[in-house]
Length: 612
Ligand code: GLC
Image (cartoon, rainbow, N blue to C red; front, top):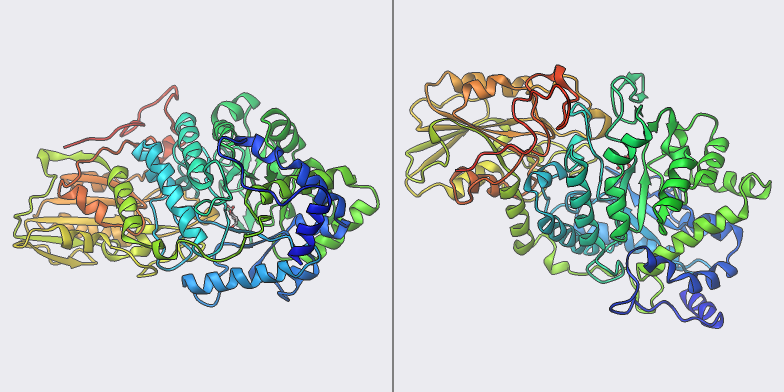
């Protein structure tokens, strides 16, 4: 079937798009440069084929995999927790190839753009390197490192045959009580803009079709991190305070605080942008012509396509038919349906046939989608869904990049009497806390499962294992999850913090330690042994008891699979250089608390960090 497509393109006087020549168009001009080929293809397409390209289904909701062929779907995703038989690289690869084979059997044989949330490495897949979440990368202040991390992630994503990641988030979280704070680089728009641009360049390079690159997605437009307390979504009878809420802010604040990451991502050539579930002054982003067409496309010159969030258009007031009409007419190009794809196709078809949605809007959406597919190399004769860089997947070289990111992400907040770095000659180090020996806790949400999970959920090095590797030959390293057994040790290393969460399930009005870990600190502090605490969290926490009980406190955020990087800082192999990407409050009542606020009186200010 692909031969038919390529033949059709040739007949139309254009060959399948060669990769952009070195020095060829980059940035948003790259996408426009494919318009001759896009015109030729569009001219061949039926309405059904066009609507198919605008439809993204989650593979777990395919009632019949053949629907990929029947509806000529343009894209498939694996949403959080939507997994193949196992989370092995091999099963992910086999799944992607099976779906691409079905797409190749359509009349035009247009390959799928295959999307996944590889937001801190390809962390859905067992054995992939799991990088620190964005909050930790913000603490590094290192755009070159962020670019390298995105490039390594792109290679690991391509090792499963996938060609699109829904990253980077360029959210600017302003209230740390929001459950997605850790997906933001910082509270500072300028730092978010710098690191977001670096991430896009790492994922896509100048040629998103290159063998070691993937299509990126800047998300979630806009002010997803600026919603007002108490406006969050109600889901299954539960009111969430922030997530998917309403950002009640001026256009000036929208632009100055929440849009800078899109300006730089678009300049860097980002191919896709995801509008937010949240609203701006009462209007859902997914329904806002002002945001989607006037600002993103017309003002910022975005030439790729807009992909909705997961069933986000369903949350637009009205019925599903009006949701589709409103969102597509506002400028949405592809809809992450992700389950009711047959209803979506049928309803969108009716809306075009009755004139509610003009064909010109459909053609614009499909043009944008095809531009990105050309740029991603999907129409090159030698394109295939074959996995690439398989040997590098989860490799030591990739893990070394992650370990360096962990080192640079750690922020030293407190170091009484120079307790840190630990001497290699200590007699016994007693490590306490369940979190000390738990890859799942140190990785956080969006790891193997949507919400993440505790336990040995993927490969890597726990902080305890890292300490064991780093300790001197004469040093005994012991561990207890509950904090007991410290008597007689030279030092206690307490590893405590938040358990994994994602999205609305992370909305939290207290910012405290879990009870279990508060008890560990209480037990440890009663042992008469100096305490060093490593905090694992997706945001600053209000934990005065930790600072009271500890001679030293390190904020390690959500470091991912390479816990050895934390040990490197503990033992001084790497002196801490991390700087707070978020203001650390004295009390939760101070939230939201951000650099520049009038009554700015934090426990530790934005940018704070001690060294050795
Ligand atoms: C989720 C998130 C978005 C993610 C998408 C696909 O609900 O809001 O960040 O990319 O759905 O998993």
